Image 1 (cartoon, rainbow, N blue to C red):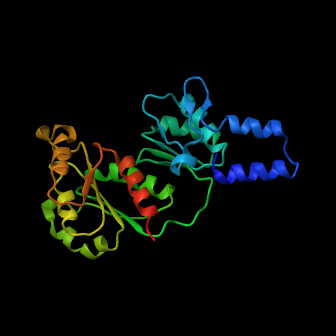
Image 2: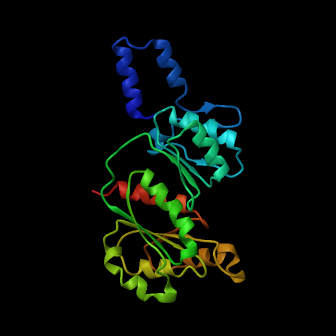
Image 3: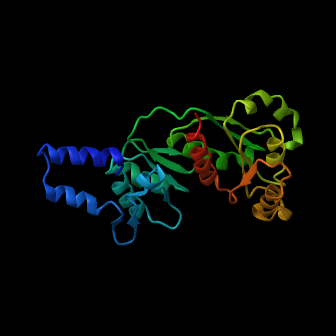
Length: 250
């Protein structure tokens, strides 16, 4: 449920089209909807600007479908992350409009059409192996109403690939840098632009990368002042923060 739905509900009540019982029933659902195994946060969009997002790992297909039902019932856009094909098939049987983004492992259902926020979110990867995490960021940023561009496989092993696209970096309002191995790309990009840079360390790399910890520590210790960092492989979290930043673009 969002502000527009509440306004419409009150207007319908004022016009005598719905009863006070119906109004009270909807208001009771505002904080959350208790469905036993989950408490769906139906108030999230009003508080935070976007509905609750479903993290699918550890959930059964049936549980995910039930949560999706309550999210889209309020005419909300729906995003589910870390979703398997099995979960998507269960969701799509109930909701044919559901789209599966295989590389990103996300499911989306669009219920709204809105004008994109002004400003550009640019997503960059160091290597091709980092693209799945970047795609999670892309899908998240797009469904949250942003214009997104991508620039893939421009890591420090061939820095000329990045420099050739320097003009693209300068057009961005926010840049998300997705990199594994030693995670150096975030610092390089941070030293070239005057916009916020969000580093996403990935679990890509050989043994001493410690499944992304090396990249995480490298990004946290960046000497480029405009770089902030999210958790390992957290493309969703980076895109959410980038979207909040981009919403302030005038």
